[in-house]
Length: 209
Length: 74
Image 1 (cartoon, rainbow over the protein chains, first blue to last red):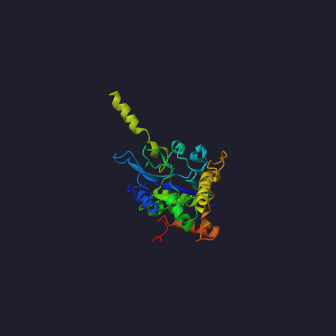
Image 2: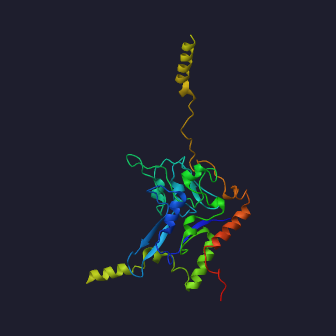
Image 3: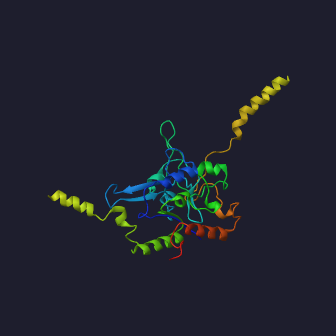
């Protein structure tokens, strides 16, 4: 059984935002909603700049599911975390629980109140008839039902963003790492996300002088 | 006479309209998905329930995301 996952190769992401544009265009995502975005760390620091495309990671043990007071989330057999917008009350708990900031809320009301939550669906639609107008309006296109993978990953020009069955993605990433001559740990991990601590050490040394 | 009867019938219908209103408060069960059921991707018109075909298509599609192995070594 497939377990759908995203994987972003930070050695390849060039912050072109093609994935963001592809997602917005494919699902006609309204203004102000960002189902996917590109995050850059160490922006402008030569040799240390890294970009990563982030959206819902379709967690195996999803915190949004755990905190939802009205239980609108469900996980499909292929590991995609989806929700029923008709039952969502827009409380925003999932936004606070999500470590990736994936849940988005339209703020089109008079007093800026939250609407129903919107997030990446892994291009799997939602609990409406496959390919129906209702599904497209609420959740966007259902590409998985057409035998296609998420648009953001398939559109990625450098193939930094990969989407699909976790086993297939792991095989692709392993091939790349072997070609680069590394073990894999240096490609994506603690140091990539938070730095090795060298900048802090430099600051401390500068402060001592 | 007919006009009065019609007016009375319309009035009675309007007065009793709220009596037929369905309850709008959902009965939630904690820890249980409360939304509508969803179909699986291989149950779409394109696959007609053929899960094996869908999975093989997904694997083939995923392999298209790597350029390694596309060109023969040479």
